[in-house]
Amino acid sequence: MPEPVAFIDEKFVPASEAKVSILEPTFTKSDVVYDTLSATDRLIFRLDDHLDRFQNSCDAMAIKPPYERDELKGIIAECIDRSGYDDACATMMGTRGPYNDISSRDPRDCQNGLIVVAVPYYYVMPKDKRDSGINISVVDNRRVSADAVDARVKNFNWMDLTRGLLEAYGKGGDSAMLCTSDGKLSEGPGFNVWISKNGRLLTPRGNLLEGMTRRSIFELAAEIGVEAIESDLYPDDLRGADEAFSTTTAGAVTPITQVDSKPLGNGAPGIMTTQLSDRYWSRRKEGWHGTLVDDLLVKEPAGSA
Ligand code: PLP
Image (cartoon, rainbow, N blue to C red; front, side, top):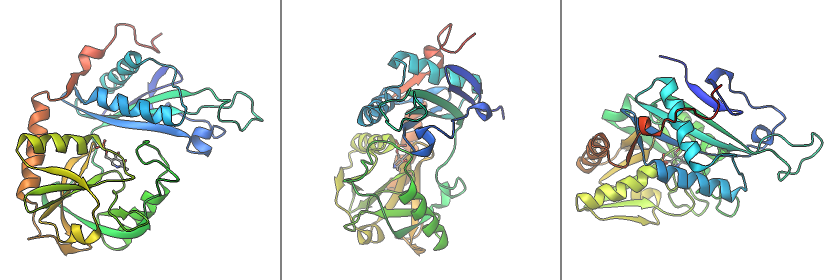
């Protein structure tokens, strides 16, 4: 497998050479926003939607990466192309960057930057559980409150999610379901959650990342004539669901077949879950929301000698 390629400081480099200074608030304060998209068969999925979300995240934190949208598209395509992966995940990061003055701690006084890296397509949920389904633990650790951190701004402030994940592992789960401070279902470390009940699909609303895969499920549900809504949901809604699944760019639809180590429904991936998963991949293979990497490659990309 060739080494991932990154774009940093205006150059394409092997990802192992892409470094962030320990003096930068990008690192010391996790002052960075990001977005992750995927490509299958060199078709980037929902490119413009990801770039819109990335732009919103940058705007929310007043981070201005020094590239126009079309340049960013070219850089993403170039990272995927140079990495040599037909199936890839690419992450773009808008960084606060180094302080202009070493003795300043003013975030307005920084040179904002852009980092992009393409890696082989990966799975947030254990890959071997895609067929059998995962065991999700409803954890005591809460998702950060919307008053403190806007989860719609895609960020690396993962203390709540990582604590939740470690708690879930400690309980024998494959991953975690975090709730809000008032006990409603929120999301997991890197994925949204869906339940199906009496033929309807429901997903939590509130302070959570509005996932691109989640958005795709709304569209796919409409295609197959299934009602899909956002709702206030509670752990018992998950435990009593007919089916449940997680959604994320890195892994798409994963069935949830156990909650707190107890079988959900009959303990097997549900029919609607499987139908949506199959449809997601077949629609992507048809080019649904797809942009070909080759159509974005520019003759002389940024960072070329
Ligand atoms: N929720 C969180 C916290 C995430 O980090 C992610 C993806 O990284 C998701 C949900 C799913 O979002 P998407 O479908 O856009 O990948």
